[in-house]
Image (tube, rainbow, N blue to C red):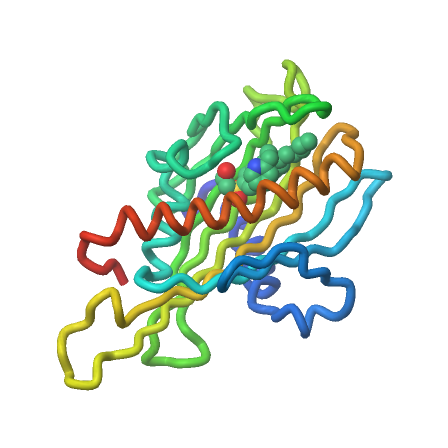
Length: 240
Ligand SMILES: CCCCCc1ccc(-c2ccc(S(=O)(=O)CCO)cc2)cc1CCc1ccccn1
C-alpha cells in the first residue's frame, strides 16, 4: 500500500484531518454554532458558502459508554456493515481494495427533494494512532474519508450530482478500571468520538435545503451509528 498512487495524499490528509479533529471547539475560534444536542452528543456547524453553495464545516463530539475506539472505527470503515446504519444510502460499491485498511467507495444517496440525487466517490483509510497525551493509555483510532477520482466513474455523467467531502472520525477509548482489580468489563470503558465533515454539494442546491438536510440527517446518523456499534458489540469480547 505504501507504493499506491494514493499513499502520499492519504498520509497528508490523515495528518491534517486528525489535527483538525483534535482542535477543540473553543480553540477553533468563533463562528461555531451548536445546532443539535442529545444526551452526551453535541453537534456544531459553521455557516460557510463557496460559489453561493453552503459548505458548512461540521464538528460533532459524543461520548458512548461500553465500546472502544477500535470497535467504532471497525464498524464505520467496514463495507459489510454500512447498509445497517447509513440511513440515506441507496447504493454502495467498493471500487478498489488498496490495502486491508484502505478502500475506495462509490455511494449513491437517496434523492432528497427538491435537490437532485447525489453520489460520492472517496477513499477511506483506517488507522491506529499513538496516544501522545498518555503513553500507557489506550491508542486512538481514526477513519478518514476523502473524495477522490476514478477513471471509470467520472462525475456528473448519469443522473447523480457528485458531492465532494472530507470526513474524519477520531475515537479515544477511556478505561476506568474496577477498584477491586476485577477483570475489565464493558462497564469500565467508554469512547470519546469526534466526527468532522465538510461537504461540497457539487451542483447547486438551495442553502436552506442543505442546512435543513444536515440539521435532520447528521444527528440521526451519529445516534443510529453509535447505537448500532453498542448493539453489535455488547455480547462480544472487547476489541481494544
Ligand atoms: C441535497 C442533499 C445534498 C447532499 C446530501 C448528502 C451529503 C453527504 C452525505 C454523506 C456521505 C458520506 C458520509 S460518511 O461520513 O463518509 C459515512 C459513509 O457513508 C457522510 C455524509 C450524505 C448526503 C445525503 C443526506 C445525509 C446527510 C448527512 C448524513 C447522512 N445523509
